[in-house]
Length: 143
Image (cartoon, rainbow, N blue to C red; front, side):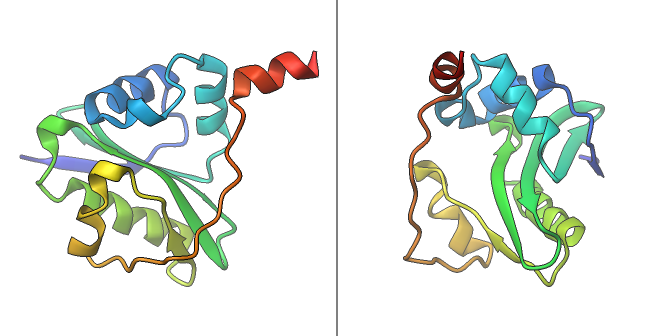
């Protein structure tokens, strides 16, 4: 299988959502909110894609300052293409694009928690969050 990887700043929201659904990541992403999905893509600093015969089979979306830290906010691989090294390559290429001097940070989906140590990532026990209210609710409050 020949997988082509590229930086793809203009990935369409439709292709992104389709892949999220084929990867199970849609369970935790606002796939029914086109405005939020579009904003997620437009404001990402690094978007790396994996394609097989032109079909999108993987994507990594990251936010970075290119100097100190890189937050890998989405790592999605089509279920039919998992366990073939695509996720590992997406992570490597994302880190390369953001700069290897940066610390790469990600929050694991519950189903993927056992994957990351297997490919060499180190667990960090002190992550703290303030959950978002959902973009639709925030937009309603602003109007």
